[in-house]
Image 1 (spheres, one colour):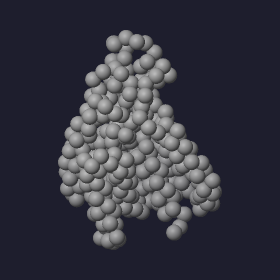
Image 2 (cartoon, helix red, strand yellow):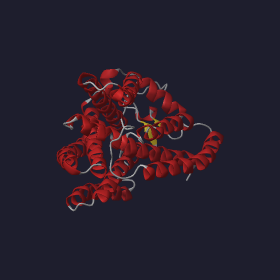
Image 3 (cartoon, one colour):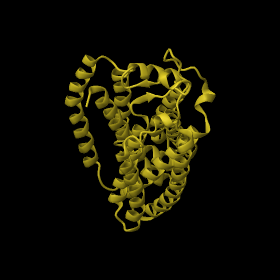
Length: 338
């Protein structure tokens, strides 16, 4: 395996890690307004309070790695998605501010305002992640000069919008499963209802998106005929989705959450399988696409990055394991809580 392929895989690992970790806290934000009482909303916020900012480190690592390993792809994507990325940053900042400001005043109007900001930031950020993924799959108008030659309307096509809706359903289901682990009593029973509805919508959108992908994704991106072993990822994805519901019904909530993590990992793997070796597919001319070779940094740069990743990644993984172990168990509200 050459360094270009290695870094394509490592980017996929970082993206999957972000989707799994920040996915559930974005899902909790989307579910936030469904809670009836102020105390219940505090429980939801405190379920993710100790970990949400650490989860976003994976997004920073993904962006930094893309910039260093494949700078041409980074420049093209960020210039094409400039308006969307600004809106994404506003949404991510707004939800963080909402968590910190909500408890500063004990008045219904104040808390209701920040509840809606928290929900809106979570929903908008999740939807934009999905739209970006959909555009990556169906291609962007990239010219021979590696520049984005479209406008905002080129990003808001039916298939990317459908993928955006699928990601909202995916993260909402993932967030509900996380809350089942962190809550108990009457609130946990209501979370079960949220899960059932979110899971049903997710399965429906998964089937619709899969069918639409057969027409929307250019044949140049389909590697499944070339590498038949990739169908195993599809089979594992379907199995993981089925296990989620079975595990919840049997009360195996930990297994259900792990199956949700496996589902997100498989979906990320399918994205990589569809794109490889391309990073940005040109809908104008396939030969103008950016791939892991014509968009990459020098081999020396990739070697240095590989050494740095080998040193740094174990610390990131260790921190993640420790922080989740320290804050494991059900949420309890006290004076230090949000």
